[in-house]
Structures are given as structure tokens and as C-alpha cells.
Image (tube, rainbow, N blue to C red):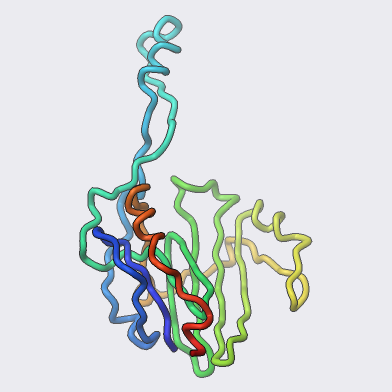
Length: 199
């Protein structure tokens, strides 16, 4: 089945069409050791705490700096995955072919981005006729958020995060935080749509 991948590379590159059977052979980089680094408002915090606690180095985090300094023009980290026009952006990606469908699994469990109660995983099954099914796992807050949600198949059931089974490492690829400048360049490229599968 055709899929589209956008790599986190610098300089930015358009979405690339590949066959899902090649997923295991695609370039792979390990999960970044540090996905992002905090930016501290040193001047504000030093002024705020200098008189009260002169020896305490406690600074307000005002933002985060992406690890764009380790991103080059080599493929390996994924910025986005698209199947049948369904875009997926995540910390981690896995894809596996089955007899009559293609499964994709994406999940967010980076502790620098989310508290445990917001951990989330989603598995989709894509069928040749365009139909799909979805399974979701999540932390307590995610489970609550979906409690009364429904789709065209009925109530959306979210399994607890503890029930999520990580896909095999050989079919897993990773994302990486990118700078604001690079993400704007990546987002400037046209995204695949369902028409790209049925034209």
C-alpha cells in the first residue's frame, strides 16, 4: 500500500511516497536522547528571587529549544506519516502489513512533553477500500476526555495506558522536535490527500 512520509531533515524536503512493504528497510535513527531543552528567563527570575533567596538558582521555564542542532540532511527521524489522507504526527511511529489491512501505531509518551495522565497511543487499520478502524490507549485524563465521545461506529472506547503493548523495535521509527523555522519550512509543502490514493 502506498504511504507518504515527511522526514525531519534540514534543509526541509517534501513528502515522499513509498510502498508500505519497504517500511522495515527505511532509514532509522535512534530516539533522540533529549527531545527538547528548556529556555529560562534568567533576568526575570534573578530579579524576582535575588533578595529573598540569593543563593537559590530557580528559574522560570519560558519555552523550549528544539534539538535542531543535531538534525542534518540524512533521513531517519520522521516529521509526519500519512495514509489515505490521514496525517499522523507523533513521538513514535510503527507500521506493519497484514493479510488484508495495514496497521499504523503512533504514540506520545515523552515525559518532557506530557504528564503520565496525557500519554496516548493510537492504532489504525487501513483497508484497501479506504475503510479504517481505530483503537486508542491513554492515561487517566485521555480516558476521561473520550468517555462520552462517539464516531460513526458507536462509542469510542479508550483502553488504559498500561494495556498498550509497544510495537516491535524493528518496525518502530522515531520523531524529533524541530525548530520553529524548520517546521514552517516543512509545513509549507503540500500535504497528501485521499485523492493521491484514488487517482
